[in-house]
Length: 202
Image 1 (cartoon, helix red, strand yellow):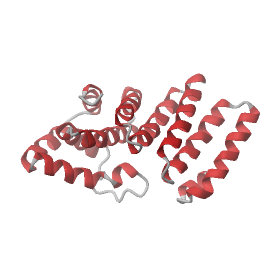
Image 2 (image 1 turned 180 degrees about the vertical axis):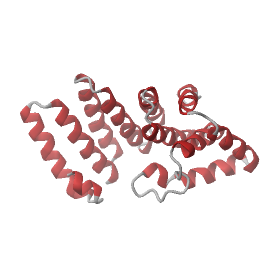
Image 3 (image 1 turned 180 degrees about the horizontal axis):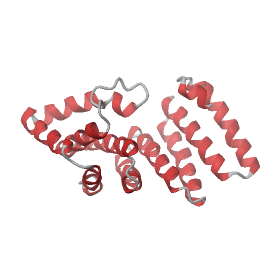
């Protein structure tokens, strides 16, 4: 299932991950079920069914919490937030991005914080919070150099960054956008997470 997912063969990945889920359930392995559910959910999300993906991710997150694996639960929160956002449930998406940012920010995980900032910024764009979105995207570009120009094949967040930046520029004007972007680029990881956790989108 993982190989098929990496190759973009999402329809092929689904039955393989479904079989894994069943086998882990039969074995009573909650950690294994949780991991297989992530793969299944990501494949289903990529096939265009965010609500079903979100339901699977909710279960995965609960299982990881039951076994005390909070880092994996935070990783699921990132995927869950993506699915909720793509299903137009922006408020809940923002909550889960913040949950993930709180966990990964506390651990100094630059890669995962970057993904959380990018995802939350995309929610802010759709909510009309253009200045805060520009700050978070500026911060993400520093935390993950090249984010603003990455082809994005492995990250739907980065693949859509160009469109979001253009929308922000159009809303704010170049001068205000540049000021917000530069302010974001000057933020430390900790400061960027604080702004994300305290921003208006709730």
